[in-house]
Amino acid sequence: MRLIVLPGDGIGPEITAATLSVLHAASTKFGLELAIEQHEVGHDSLRQFGTTVRPQLLDIVRAADGLILGPAATFDFRDEGRGEINPSMFFRKHLDLFANIRPAKTHAGLRNRFGDFDLVVVRENTEGFYADRNMAQGGGEMLVTPDVAISLRRITRHCCERIAHAACRQAVRRRKHLTIVHKANVLKIGDGMFLGICREIARDYPGLEVDDILVDAMMAHVVRQPDRFDVIVATNMFGDILSDLTAELSGSLGLGGSLNTGSDHAMAQAAHGSAPDIAGRDVANPVSLILSAALLLAWFGERIGDTRYEAAARAVEHAVATAMQAGRGTRDVGGTLGTSAMGKTIADILISQTH
Image (cartoon, rainbow, N blue to C red):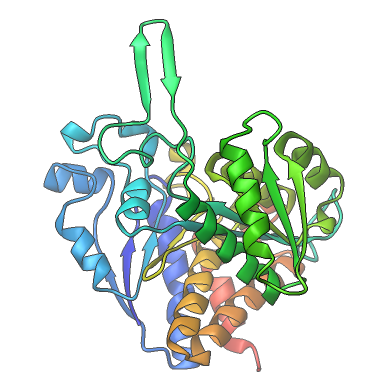
């Protein structure tokens, strides 16, 4: 498996290094023969090449088997005309990574105020209110006058159908329960289309229990009783907010894995940002990117029919859970380990596991 790794900005290089230590351990234990190639993205790329994402990088990524993207300082990148491109948006759009898969689950050993749960948010990734990816040319947000701003949301049958299929496939592999999150009582056309198409697609999956909840009510339900949910599907913005909430409910946003998938490509990506305020201090939690990389291994293994990669992914997840249960975590989850030590701990547990 040939992986392209883009460490990114802020804490990106630190959590990427920790993630690579785990991947090297998994490669050794399961005979994966991972070929890992690193390139600059974000501020390092801007200084070296005059752009945060140089054009040649897209072809390099397309030719590989998977991409690992560290967090980038996206708030700093405001003017594409000056080479300030949002790397996450760039690869999601150009690789057509339409599904953002965001598992969230509690871990034994961590303080938990909301009860045990294990769920997945499946978020549409290529349209909706996100102004940088819902137009063929130009942006979906405009300033009409200094005092009037307009944001456009695009919802299409094609994108609704494929995210519905992605969510249903997740649900049939799990507990066969799909929850559609929407605001069709107010956004009657756009969310009405999304809701109707999701229900229509779900009928093609026998045995699937389907319900739907308004997004504002959903925020209350998922805090009050997160264990009632299995797979949740939502449009881009609602899914973005909900997946951060569910990750935090599990113990920390630093525990939330994230995989962006399309028909031909996939990108592992930490669920959080570049956190420049703690960069270089060896305190960031690398587990989000580690779990995201595990999701990428599983995706690749399923794609080529090689069970070694899926076994390696399960072993990484089990090593994380073992570390959490033993209280061996970073400060955000009540532990004392630094970023590097956290990666080494998970790698060591993985190597020592018997299967």
